[in-house]
Image (cartoon, rainbow, N blue to C red; front, top):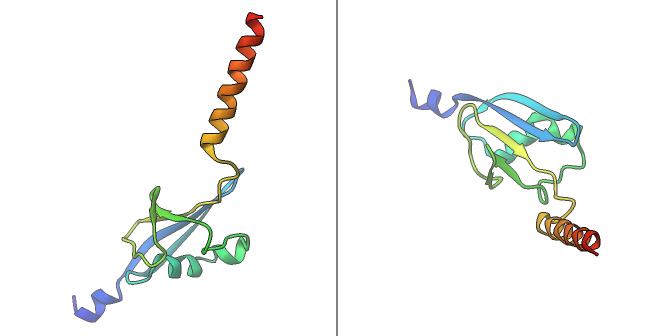
Length: 108
């Protein structure tokens, strides 16, 4: 394999965006030297989902956060995460308070 061929090798990746009721998967063959951001831009996901803002939405590869300037390997799955609607810790705290209040109400 020549140096030029290896520099321009194609890898196969997926770009995934999960919505509450569906998951969209974009499969691509891209140059191995592209960044996560460049791959996302080439995938077409941004055109289909204009609510995605790469300055705000976190991205990851197989559930691990990565930076937009990271590179990926063959068969990697780039995931675009939606912002959380509520803080999970706050939700758990409220549920615990409700359960405690209901238990106290039953005992009274």
